Every structure is written in C-alpha cells, then in structure tokens.
Image (cartoon, rainbow, N blue to C red; front, side, top):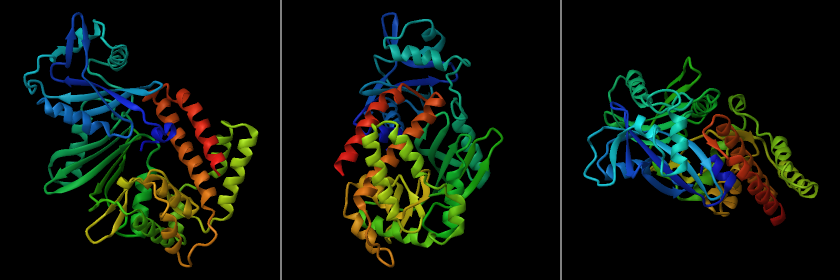
Length: 417
C-alpha cells in the first residue's frame, strides 16, 4: 500500500486520465465530442498498481506504449484524479471509432469535456512542446536514458522493460530483461539515497536475504540510480513463516555496529508529538501512555522494516525468504515489525511465532500497546510521504482531506485499547 493510502486507510478510487502521446508528431489520442475533447479514462482501487492497468488498456487497443509517469494527483472526497502520461508509437492503434490522434496544440486551444483534464494539460505543457513535470523523471524520454545506462553497466542489451511498478517525476521502479536475466532499476530524487546504501549493508551482513546491488550511482543532478539483481521467489503467503524469518534476521543484526550506522533511529517522540496535534489532551495522554508501555517492554533495538506487505517478502522453492523494498526501515523495537506484519497480513498468529523464534524466547511483550504504536507510526510515515509529494507538486488537496481521517483513526485506535 502506498504511504498516502495508509493515511486515508479507506477504499478510494483512482481515476486515470490517459495522456497517450506520439512524441514524433506531438499528438495525443483523444475522443472528440463536438468542439470538446476527452482523454481515455480508467478507474481502479487505491491499492491497485496503476501502471500495469494503463498498459493493459492500451495493449488491448493495439497501442504500443511505455509509461512516462503518473502525474498531478488531485484528491477529492472519494476519488483521486491522476494524469497518466504514456509514450506511444503512432499508427499502432487498431480500428476504434471513438479515438483518434489530435495535435497537442489543438487541444490547448479547445476546451476539455472534463475539467480536470483541461487543468492538467495546461499544467504539463507550460515548459515545452511535449508534456512534462518538474523532477528528474518528469519528461518523455527518461526510459530510453535508463535503458542505455543499464546496458552500459552490465554490457548486455536490454531486451525490453518487463514491468514498470512506479513512475512519478521523482521516483521510478522497473524490471527489465537483459539476455535471459531480470534486473531491477530504481531511480530516486535528491535525498533518497538511504535505501540502496542500507540494502547493500544488510546484504553484506546477512547474505542471501536482501537484493544484491549491481550498480549504484549518485548522479550530478542529485538523483540516485540503483540496479539490483533479481531476487528469486514469489510473494510469501505464510505469515507465521515470515515472522520466523524476520526474527532470525533481526537477531543477527542486533549486535552489528554496521546496522546502527546505516539505519535511522525510529523517533517515537516525534511520532507522538505529531499524533497529539490531531487529538484533545485526554486522548493525547492516553496515546502517550500506550507508546511508553510499548517502548518500556522492548528488547535490544534492531532492524525493523515498516512496510512488510506480502509483495515485499519473497520465498523461493527451498523456502528461503528475502526482504525487498526497504525504504521504510529503522532501528527500533524488534516486535514493532511483527505488529506491522500482522496488520499487513491481517493475521495475529504471527505474534506467537515471532516470540518463539527469539533465543531466549521473548516474554512479556505488550502486543496491544505495540499495535497502538504501530498504527500511530504507520499513519505518521504515510503523512510524511504525503507532505513530501505535496511539496513537489505530485499531488494536491490530499493533506486537507486526510487531516480529519487521521484524527478519527487515531481516536478509534486509542479507545480500542
């Protein structure tokens, strides 16, 4: 689940407005409604990866495309509109009575049928003839540059991009095939170099448990380009087995000075202060007490991943598990990660498996207090991500909508205790 999704924690629809552009002729694929125009529109749930859905729609109509970016999110009470910029090869469209290629300059001079589409198009053509957004990956052509970089690094041609997992102006994640192997590329904007450094450090401390780095480059524009080998396996389905593997890795890292050097300390005081700003004093004091109880019962701090979604844990045919997507990793109470795991899998049986996997076995863990703490931290991290992408202009209106939802979630969690 995305960070902003964890803030809202509700079933919200994404509305995808597909800006499919033939870059050679600067034209877009639209439907005509009298003097107005309309981009293709798709809808999907908040938790659905938008990139594959948009590519599938285009492929079903014979349009060969690459995703350029999911741009200009505008949040409403129940939906978030997104402009999905896609680069297409003109002439690949099969017969379709409702869609045709229209020069972008003609769209600029005419009204859109849907207000959001007119507003979004105005925003993305401010900087040049082709649509773009501020950010290192906010322009047409970045995928070709990434492919050339991968080929230079591994001295093997990139056959094709298998899948784009995330494409925003400031962060992209994709899988490509080179010869017979898969590699994964992650490009991040300024200040996002912690994850690859941390992954490389953990991979050296616990070999075979994390992705192996092929190349890591901090570029002149402040971006970080990171290439890793494919982690063999499929998404894990046994939450108890993941809990045991997590505990084993955490115990190996409790005495490693290298772990502390690369991991930011989870600042529970900052999370509590942030949460208290949404609550009255009585509820804020209850929250402080719960978090204090959770912290008092904690054992030696170690690595705690705070996005243990099933897709972020892979298991191979031999049962070996590997952890990926370590962006939200901290030094903190080990059992807090087990609570996050339980919440993502909706399975409290992980607690017993986690306790028994420690040597000596954990005793006296205050799981209810940790659940309150995990909820607070989860929402806090999501809010921080929402603030970041609001500041970069990737989304608008979300913080105002999220504030009352955050307050309600915190109150409900406190009074469930």
